[in-house]
Structures are given as structure tokens and as C-alpha cells.
Length: 259
Image 1 (cartoon, one colour):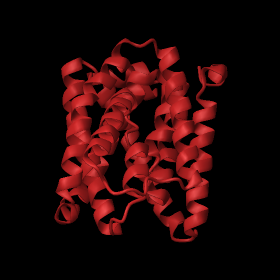
Image 2: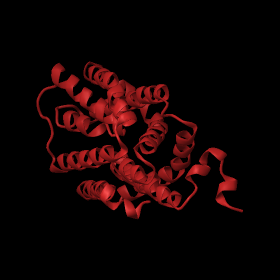
Image 3: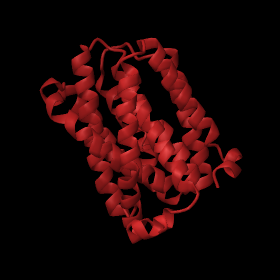
Image 4: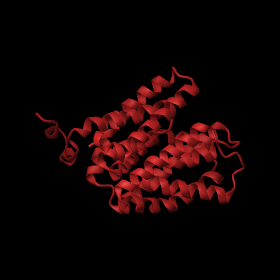
């Protein structure tokens, strides 16, 4: 009995030699999320994009991330600093459709180059330790939200601008974490609506995203175990290396290894 007879008809289009590689990518991105708390999209999107194209990669990581973020949202709500979180989230919500237009109409080749190069730039900034240390100001907050919305709408990697902006300030750790959880949850909800309206949330994409959820969750559990045995510097360093490797190997130069 072949795998295609066991899976729903909507998934048969994905049943080929790439499926096992895709499951390994989902597992690896889950590991990164489990032991670092971030970076899953920066692994998943470039590599799945190399296999199936940016639209499938971006849409499916949105579904995975949205499902995984639900348990963390309610406990975080009391700690959110609304005067900072709401303007930033509003700016992002207004610009998500702009990024989505890029996902819809920009040729997949140039878009993949943009995603990979953007990931490399962001991870270098994160690894360098550079952060914005000034006081939160409304124009800067709105600008960061707008940048995050555009890049996130096109790639579902909205995090680095926010992390660089919020984690360098004087916020208590609980407040910064709560702001990030709230922001990403709202970002996912708005993105889901925009993607549905744009026709990106197809049956194929939804089914494939749910299929990749299982290896992602297994990877996240494994990453949590790994985290318990690693120092802060070691796990962040490992995450940065994995993300850089994913971005570099996803470049169209290496397509012969994926297709």
C-alpha cells in the first residue's frame, strides 16, 4: 500500500521524494523553536520554499505557528504593556497586506533570494548582540511595526525587527516576553485573515501545514530537552548557526539538491 492511498486526496500532490525532506525540515525548525524560543520561521521558510515555493512555505508556517502560540497567549495577557504593544501591532496589521501582495505577485525566484538574504542580515544583527537601547518613541514604534508587517506578510518572519527593538530596552523580562507573545498572536490572526482573503489559504496548503505540524511538535519537544543541558550562549549560538545554514542552503544556487 502506497503512502498516497493513506493520506487525504488534498495531500497527494506533496507525496514524492521531497516529503521526507520536508518532514526533516519541519522537525529541525521545531528543534530550533524548542531550545531557543525563536527562529523556526527562519529555518522553515527558506528551506520549504526551496522545495515547494515561497507560498506553500509561508502559508504553512503561519498555520503551524498560530496553533503552537495559543497555549502561551492567555498567561501573557496580564503582563502586556498595551501602550507599546498596540501601536506596533496596529502598524504591522496595516502593512501585512503590502507584504502579502509581494508574496502573490513577485516572481518566486527573486522572492526566495530576498527571504534568504533578509534572514542572513537579521541573524547577523541578532547574533552581534546589537539592540535598540533608546526609550520607546511612537514614530520609531510605528516604523518598526510597519517593517515587521511588510516582511512578515511576505515571509512570515516578522520577529527580528521586533526583537531588536524591544529586547534592548529597559523592559522587565516578563513584559518584553508578554509583548512579543501578544504581538505574534495578533500578527498570526491578521495574517490568516489576509491570506484567506487573498486566496493563499488553499486546501492543499492547509492540509500540508497540518501534516508538518506533527514533526514540528516532535522537534520542539526534543529542543526543549536539549535546552535543559545547554548554556544560554551555547543554545543561542547553535540556533544562529542552524538558521544561517538554512538560509544559505536555501539559495536558488543549490536547487539541484532540493528538486
